[in-house]
Length: 204
Image 1 (tube, rainbow, N blue to C red):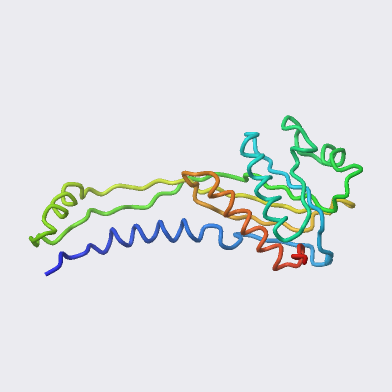
Image 2 (image 1 turned 90 degrees about the vertical axis):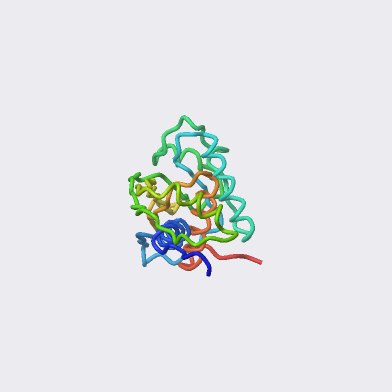
C-alpha cells in the first residue's frame, strides 16, 4: 500500500502556487478615459524606482517588449537623469523636441505583509522502500506561518500633447526572490491590457 498523502500541506503549497502564478494575471483596478480612442506610436517609459539599476532593467525590458510589436519606445534614463524627480516639468523638458506621443509611468504604490498558516503534517506509518523518505518527513511536522510581501504597482499613461491621464492600472504581485520575474510579469500584463484597450496596436 502506498503511503497516505497529507492533504493540508498540499493545499498550502497549491495556495502559494496559485497566488504566485495569478498575482498579476489581471489588473486589481483599472481606469481609462473612454473619450480617448487614439493608439500610441511612440512611448516614453518611466520606472519611478529609486534604484537606478532596476530602473534601467525595467525600462529596457519594456522597450524591448514594445519593439517586438513594432511600437516605438524610449527608456527615460536616456532623456532624464536618475536624480530628477518625475514631475510634469521634468517630463515636459525631457520630451521637448522628441517625437513622443505618450508617457508611461510605473511606480510602487505600496507593500503589505500577508501570511498563510501551515498546519502540522501527519503521515501514514507504512513501511517499504519509502521508509527512509517518510522518516525524514516525520521529523519536521510542526505548524508554522509562511509570511510574504504583496507589492501593489501602479502604471499610468498620459497623452504627451495634453498631459492628460488616459489610462491607469493597479496590480498586485507577491514579491519574488528574483526581481526580474516581477518585471517581466508586470510588463506582460501591462502590454496585454493596453492591447486589449486598443491603446497600442502591433504593427506589421
